[in-house]
Image (tube, rainbow, N blue to C red; front, side, top):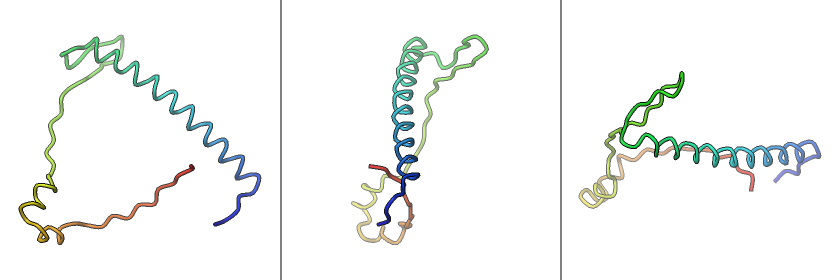
Length: 91
């Protein structure tokens, strides 16, 4: 584990402050979104001044790997692919 210098400590503090601001703004944006959705009801589109707002249902199909595993058992193992991620976290 490396030790952070004063410059990096300041950057991490700034990052955490910005993340808090983003979280607060996201909460506010979600509240506004909920109000707009409630106003639209079952309507899929709405003109709001120069803005066009859409709220349409989207249907997608995905594999149910739990059900497949019940049917195919270990034969399913050969069809998994490994994905490597490297998350950045400050905790």
